[in-house]
Image: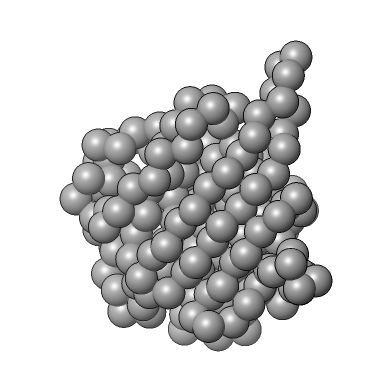
Amino acid sequence: MIVAEIHKKLTAGHGQVDLQVKLQAEKGSITVIHGPSGAGKTTFLKIIAGLTHANQGLVVIDDQVWLDTANGINLLPQQRKAGFVFQNYALFPNMTVRRHLEYATSDALWITELLKIGGLDGLADRKPDYLSGGQQQRLAILRAMANKPALLLMDEPFSALDAKTKAGLLADLKQLWDKLQTTVIIVSHNLQELAGIATGELYIES
C-alpha cells in the first residue's frame, strides 16, 4: 500500500502554485493522475521518488517510511528503489538497449523477457539515437521495470506509441504488474487509453 500526502509551493508563470495532494492506493493497484498543465503532476511523482523535495510531506510504501518531514525522514532515491519513467525518457546515449537493462539487473532471463515484451528483442544492440521515439519510450518503460520495483511511477509513458502498439504493450505490462504485484502510478492526459486497466484516478488542480 502507498500513502502519500504532499505539500509544496511551486513557481508557475508569474505566480505560485500551492501543490497539496493526498493519495492512498492498495498494493498492486494502478492509479492514473490527470489535471491541467503546470498543476504539479510530475513534481508529485518526483517527490515520491525522492528526486524533488517537499515543503511538507509523508510517503509510506508497504509500511516503509520514505518521507516524513515532521520527523526528519527523507530516504535517498537509491534507497527508495522506485521505478521511474521520465517524460523525456532520460536514456543514456552511449548505452545499447541491452546495456540499459543490464545497468539495473544482472538477471539475463528477465532481460530477455522484458526485451520481448517491449518488442525490442531484435534491437538489443542499438543505441538510443538509432531507435524511433516509440522504441525509446518502450526502452524507458522496460528499464524502469528491470529491478522489479514495488512502486512504478510513469510520466506520460505512452504518448509516442501508436494505438496498436500501445494496446499490446499495456496488455503485456498489466500481466507483468499483476504477477509482480507492482503498484503503478501513471500521469496521463489520455484517461481513455488506461480505462481498461486503471483501478483508481486522482485529479490534481492548478
